[in-house]
Image (tube, rainbow, N blue to C red; front, side, top):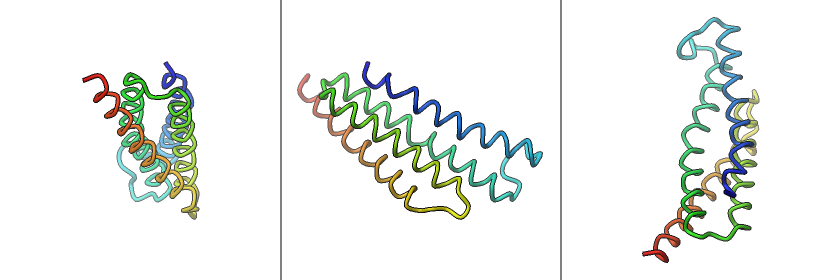
Length: 128
């Protein structure tokens, strides 16, 4: 149940990114796509990037937890994923962008993906 703890802050970040898209769509009266609006395009991509990476990362973390990964490592990876996705979102919504936020965000996300995958694999091997 450790990873369940980390889903709340991730859900809040997802909602923040979602509401940014909705706000821009309403303000610009653009129901689909970005309509060439750079700010809306940035909001859409920040939201989509989160939606593309976080579910797979959470799934790997759950599998690692089921496989018996150390609780301290699961908490560390959960915290890193939250910090990374918040940083990435903050970097993407700024105009002009501060790429340092995005670099930390993607580096942290890729680290979580790799470590969680290795831990899930190890857990599967130990139970086989």
